[in-house]
Length: 353
Image 1 (cartoon, rainbow, N blue to C red):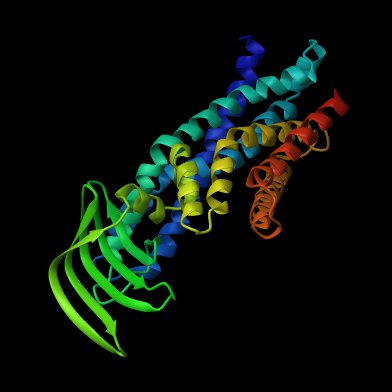
Image 2: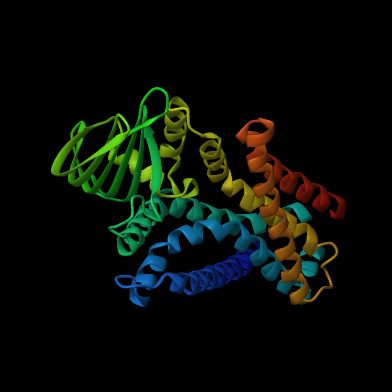
């Protein structure tokens, strides 16, 4: 690695890490403020800090592309303001060589962010969701505010929280017949997975028999189902926080159950292609630095970075859900915004080379 590579790479990397720290900190602070609206007995300010702390890895993974974009604009902008990039050009360094210099630290940040999103965030996000759901659970409710729904044949399942070791809390079962008429409801305080079945604890059962209801309280009841603790864990957390090795099989499971699965496939392709999105945004930043923002102020560069980042995110949020309506492949929905960044960035740099 030449001195030019080290110098440019260091400037971009330091700026990117600074922006990432700022963005994650501000987002976490906003989340703390929002969570205070849900403060109650058992869920105080200390609990909110613990919950938000668990979500930090997910926030890091989420903000990496945005931080790389603004970090490249700030780092390269400083070098432009001091005419150091001009000196490099005069020394014979081409535009494309400078682009590679800026892409190297972006690749490091993108790789670290991908690793965090794949190996750290899934576990901490599950802990966060379970921690908050258990702290805010209401024993009188049939299905808690948090958690997720699943389906096993004609039985619909809601679980408030899932913990490691195959333990679920706040389990609600709604059993229907073939004509979709409700037959029985089960509400269990806790469920423990044992091999190929679950053992429900502290169960309240209500059956509908010939226009009347029959209620029963049980200490234990066996529940035979193909739903595993792993599947319940996938239901509780957002698809974007799941590891790639679980996203695709989960999408196929939902497809087999007749449930919506396209959003899971979309999350799979977005997560897989996120490093490419990060590098594409850095290319766009390069084209602005050597173009309209060459003489711009630092504030103007940050403003343009925010506009580009927000536009990129809006395009992702629009094109992705549109695949559900118009029926095109989730892979295409994930690729289009990234391809536009790459092609636009390369074309703009080539014009100014």
